[in-house]
Amino acid sequence: MNIFIAETIGTALLILLGNGVVAACCLKNTKSGPAGWMVITTAWAFAVYVGVIAATALGSGAHINPAVTLAFAVNGNIGWDVVPAYIGGQFLGAIIGALLVWIHYLDHFAVTLDEDAKRACFCTYPAMRNYPINFINELVGTFVLMITIFYIAGASVTLPGEAAATPVGLGSIGALPVAITVWAIGLSLGATTGYAINPARDLGPRIVLACVPLRTDPDWAYSWVPVLGPCAGGVLAAVVYQILQRLTA
Image (cartoon, rainbow, N blue to C red; front, top):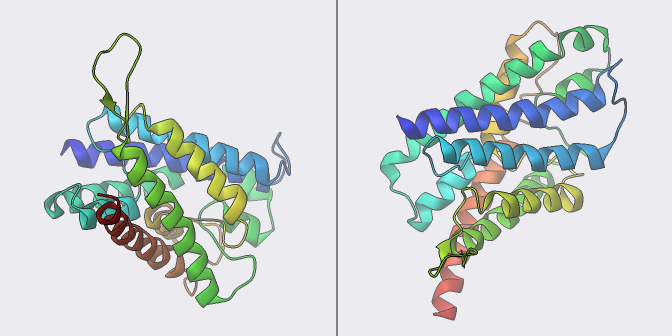
């Protein structure tokens, strides 16, 4: 139960702050106006940091991403028995976070006519629609995220005043390098699809968009890409990491 609650709260904070910055930059009559891609990618990185810190403090491994959970299960870092608790919490948290964004920016949604702008506050869509390439975009972005996370989680540091090394993990020590990795992915690779790199981050808010009275098309035809692409990227990263570990052993 701790895992489920922790992942719910951590993912809700991730989506509240991540989709919140998109709303701030894309919706009409906000104080930030069209602040641009640098602001969006930076805030998403900070949102990851906040979500990881919160989920760690509440007692989970702070995955806040089904692709991370799936990759860790494939790699043997966690048992398959805890996967439903992780992923269930992540999807519930994503839904809660998206609802909070909608409520927070309710007045601004009401005066925004641009359908793409409103959709972007919930879920991703490609700059150029080409499903095979879009799938590869999401796979590659998630592969970079996950292969980096494996090495971050496996590293150790010796803290000031401590004699023994402390594993980095994905908790308070690992949160910042993971956030920086997400920032780099967003800046370098994210402009093609909006870099979901997280099935819950995309599908949960997309469901909310379909339910709230915004009359905005959730674009279900594209929805499989930011779900299956990240899952494939996470699994591939786990396989490649295992191969590299054997080669360097």
